[in-house]
Length: 447
Image (cartoon, rainbow, N blue to C red; front, side, top):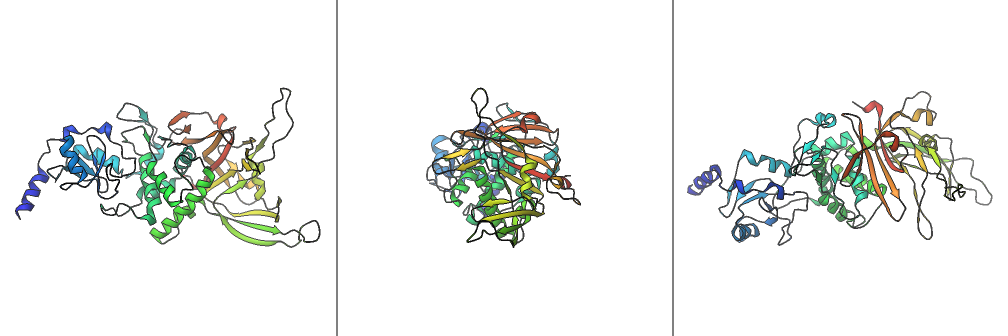
């Protein structure tokens, strides 16, 4: 009884160390491990120096740090509770709510996110636009950054991840079965956080989770293909969400379409294909587009000519009449169900017996009103898409960088984002970029 009274007295008293907090030292983007023991259990952040320490009881790392460095305020990185050490009492003060919010941002009205053109100001005075902040390049992670920026444009997926809830506990900081979705939710909320202390976000925790769950297929310091990451990411995120919700996932609702393909197998003892095809129906989450071969002729200055082709011409691959030949036969594809969000992959990189080659063909495309009903000869349907994200590659196959073009719907301003750098760009330059992956939104789904 006496101990409970003491606890209440300590809980309600004004802490004398609140003024010692250094907000500019706080960074909650990195992996939540004790800086001494590297443990992820019961980790606290020192609100004076920003370092992470384990525990708060006697002889723990946080307790020792409070005595050695005279740093007294620590926040639990799982439940956001703040304690004063070594006295070990909880501190509750309205002036600390912004710190707790930055660790775990909360949102109420998501409609405001899409109609905000007002920039926020970071602690160092720099301005940033929530939802369009730069992401740190963690050594050759530009491919990862553009994928995360692109997926943040998918409104249903973004809203779902923002409101996704997980049970948090100090003894079990994460569940491996839902680690990916938990980290995606955290990063999404930080990207759209209007009260961020910094004008950028570090995706360190999510990239570490992807490294772990992909068995180092994608890891820090190793360049990878953003399309490979998208395929792996959507597949594994779908599996995790099925494990959590036990129902059809938001991934299928957003990206899944259906197509029918006719497969004409080659004749065994003659040149040609069988007259009767094998017909199958299957779902898809993205469509691959084949670029024409680069011509060998050169111009008067002995420079190779860069060909150009419209995206409408490439999409005709799925009109049900165009033949696609390969070593195992001839195929014809027909889209039978169009997804709400259409991912298009231009097959720019080709690996031969010796090295990787890049096809520099320029694909021209509209930013609005991509009419698939005309491309695919759909007479009784009106299928139009608007571009919401364009991932492009600049440079050669060996030495190149990935950038992304995204639009702020509040004022229809297009941005080009490369890691931490964001700049305005005119639509005319977007349509002649070396597009690699694009995401389109079905017009009928727009609000």
